[in-house]
Length: 380
Image 1 (cartoon, rainbow, N blue to C red):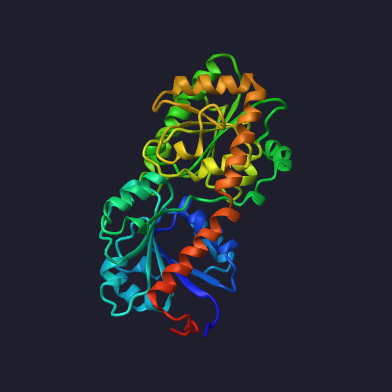
Image 2: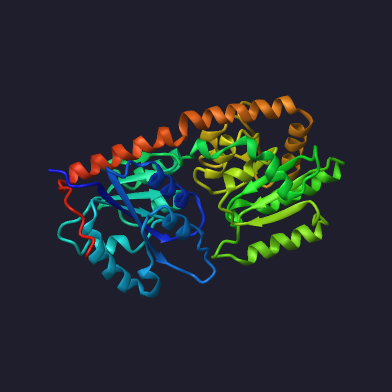
């Protein structure tokens, strides 16, 4: 007999603003609540970490456990030992180190799904209790398979998703009015956490080079400081000042309305080295934006050069500036690239496509675990 929904606990190493945090929000929004109930717990907290994800999840009715923020590592493990048996499945994100020591203490364990957004995460830690490893792109899936040699089929690829209904081009006028952008002024954007591997300085240097050609544009950096490298934001701001771009480059910080803001852009840039599957590129595609990007793990699955985006070499702001100039000078090309990327996103990364894959995964691992779906003990 089935009693209510299956309960899935997502355990994060930390909760900031990123692709995995967005993924769990979209799952919570699109999974059938009669069948699946999601909860989240974070294991580490620093004073400068944003509250945004906590607030967004809680506003959706998703409980967010904060208890470990006041505990030591050993105490967090003990907390998880008490908490995890209540759930039908556990999803461990960001190679969280607390989960395995807790599971190893349990006589009866819920199935563990690990979720990784970086190759380094897939290669980290043991895998003997991992029922399935989910990588957001092929290279991460392959990395996980390499450390699961006796059961490589248990390493899966499920890409990051977007909710196409959140992207409304009719909001373009209000966004550009908010930015006080003159009529006809192109706006080029970047979205993400300010992390060194994302090479935001290359975007800024490209802005300077494009401006030096006489083409006027505004450049929006949407995203806040990374809690583990807060000094990087200050370095980027100092670079903007040094290049005399203060009137052209805007730092917008962490925003809850990224899909809305993307409607105000004319092109999108992503220049990372060492990422997984950039959620930001899928968002840009959902907004029908032409994208200039570096070849970096998942981007090679998302973009076909000249078909739905333009590739540039790593750490080459001059090539970025040339590609942006091409898009600004050829509206037909820009429109075609953006339209084709939207089609790619709709066919591969839309919630309607990705959520059923998560549903099948949850159903499979729970069924194979032999655990019964029983009334959830909220009073524990």
